[in-house]
Length: 115
Length: 114
Image (tube, rainbow over all chains, first blue to last red; front, top):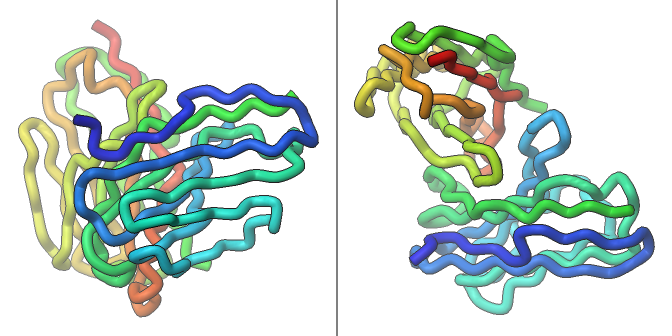
């Protein structure tokens, strides 16, 4: 019954590999997000999608490609992983459009470690 | 870009004490949110504030939306060990609110000594 669920919880991989993180929400929200939390716990937005359409794309390297097959899912694919990509990645969702100022509901994160 | 300055960065208090933390910005925000993050989990919403001057409580937690719309504070009364965690303020800035970009403060790490 988890509202925003993302998999896997932990991901350990080597530099240069390609990996994906999946996210699903069952709240009926229209907008989904990916946030990155660095080692200092700072949360920074990467992308947002509203009803499968890209709304926000912060200066994220092209190696990161979000994909939204439907409004309940937002996956994140990362190509050619680098050491600096190590972080915790959080998926989130919110009600209404990106302009609604609604609170975000977060998943429990995916801890990515690149060795 | 917009920034939120959250303080203090960390607090170590005795169980039963009251706690206060705040968030300030040089820009105007039209929504303030307070989240708590436990280890290994995602941030969970504690309180949402939508109007300048608004004062809202959630159990032992109280938060206020500053009159100037550039600040907010969170108080926790009679702290207990399970209050341990990282507290984040977050806000939607104005006039860029139509971007839907929620900005986060740097977080306040709270430790409670039983």
